[in-house]
Image (tube, rainbow, N blue to C red; front, side, top):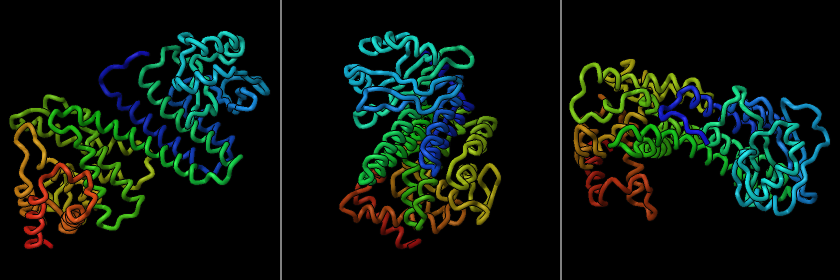
Length: 410
């Protein structure tokens, strides 16, 4: 499996995120089953730049794979691929993408026996569709348009897309045979959404990895944003949007030199200008992705604006700053102050809150600060503590903070 350059390919990242968004929409569409599967195949082939592809449905009663849909291949009607029981078991147990020329064991026997058929469809890789220990189908893909090898990142994105399609096939089987399993269907779709979140979180982790001092920063900011949004009465859809915005708010930093991000001394004017461009770059990247949440890219663009107009990149003031941006501003600043940075050690909770109080009305919105404090109060008084506040300090420190805030803004 070939490795790509360590440099993050922005165009490919954008394309892959768009493909995942599109595949999620296809999986929940009201289109008929065959149209859904065809759309999914086209998305896979387009994402990987492949000219030939087939999706098969597996019939466990007959132990055979039957073509559902294909592209770039003629005369497949009625053609079936027979499997032996030990071959089915191996496909389920390994549950991994198979490069035809590197196959081993029972898989090699299958590929040798069906060589004529696999040559006909010009299959280069095979991806079994497995859900909950059951084989539900298989995808066969030809070589890339370029004739080149598949990169490791191609296999990674294909693995995610294959799981989406496997769930869709599995759900179709359940709906067709056992309509009573609606709850299981819903769980599988929740699992699919979690995979989508996990993929975005992986991108956020890659961004944070450039800064030795801020590991986990994007995830913490995302969690703080969710806590604030809940207190402000956001809808579930709006909460999802601010969650993703928190994860991706610093994506523009992938274009900033690592030496600048980790510089322990004061930045030069040129270096500061480069850092200050990251919200704009984040906006330009995210604006190209068809997210289902409104204003996500705009919220990210303005997460360094200040109420008094002293922020960047557009020096917006007051009500001109979107609410989502104001939430991101507080969450981002709070995490920056409570974690170690190359230019200073973390502040105590007391000092952090003092900084926030002194900046009320100039940098931070009073309503949003109140909502954040209420979220922390609820956590303090709850039997089940929220993991987002576990690292902030002792219970006594938080109680002291609560009293201080009650005397000032609550």
